[in-house]
Length: 143
Image (cartoon, rainbow, N blue to C red):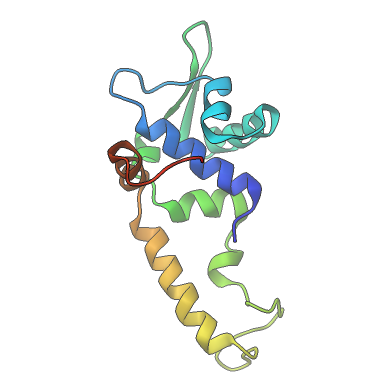
């Protein structure tokens, strides 16, 4: 459903959101290890998130990445939108250029309900929500 880049972005943001207060910053190597993602690819993704003001990048010996205030309250929807765009939220299930109520594809009406539910879930699920699940042990970042 999501691209690899999007999966790594979400997992990286969730990992950073799980860090304890006073230790909210992590380096690239730690983030890549915690999310089972390649370092070089993770670096590019993190820079995209920095450009979109979802992460802060701090240089120097105690540097690293941390979630911005805006990023902490970010819904999952925003991360997906930044990395993968809007296609999952507005695109046709069968890939038609024009798919609407007036010109529906063969699964338009069924898929629209699923897409609307998915969009609603992603708009109401924040990084804090996901981090809470990780920190309480009911969900995981990797196997």
